[in-house]
Amino acid sequence: MAGRALAVPCADLDTLPMTSAESDGPGRVDRLLRYPVKSMLGEELPAVEVTERGLAHDRRVALIDRDTGKVASAKHPRLWSRLLTVTAQADNSAVRMTTSDGKELWSTDPGVDEALSEIVGRPVFLTDAPPHEAALDRADPEDVLRDHTRPPVSARTGRIGGGSPEGTFFDFAPVHVMTTSTLARIAALAPNGSAQAERYRPNIVLRTPLTRGFTENDWIDRTLHLGTGLVLRVIARTPRCAIPTLAHGTVPADTAALRVLAEHNRVTPTESMGPQPCAGVYAQVLRPGRIRLGDPVHWA
Image (cartoon, rainbow, N blue to C red; front, side, top):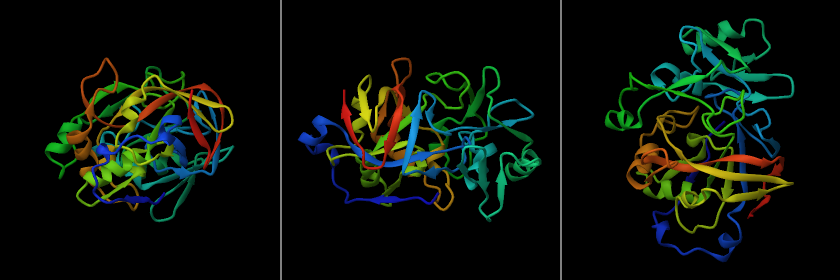
């Protein structure tokens, strides 16, 4: 999935007042993205059904490390950054994975585990069923910022899916939302003047009025109505790890994707956590529905 860079003038978006459009709702659906294999590149969609388990086929399967039993995640880039060289696309029966050199694998292929093990350089197997008390390793973002020339060696182990239905592979919650206002603010603060949504792996990008950056910080416990019947409740700000700094297919590595947040939006994701570099928000699904590009979004 090629990155769509968002380049904006380096204005101070935080000083702009709210508009009447934003007071009625945060905007319209600008992009829809899903990632059928956890930590692989994903696909863009014109429309999608959303249930309590998130966008249809999102994080449908994941790789499990045969040696440790942990879920493979590029949050530990020294082990798993190669996942971000493979693009995954889903249909109703299987997931197709395409390598950077164009080789195709299907989740139903007899030798898919061996082929994926060769790609990532570790023994893995593909599954749609998370292990009991599924866990993954997450490199400390501060280590990434201290020495961006080398992927962190150490990582903390944590459980997945604290805000998700049982049996899913989401890091925390089933839907991840970002706004174009936040992407514009990151771009304004970044040395290269651009920001790619792909680095932050949202499901829904909302086109918002250019009011101020990081507007999602104020959405906790608010309810969003989208598309045909879909209702989301925002439950947490999204803390950021090493993943935004890594190369995503043709999108090059860039430590500024995390450093900007560490310097300008270090906030508490939830009451139980200390300040973290954040961008976007996590949401749970209160009522399933269908959304399309261009759908308006309203507050409850």
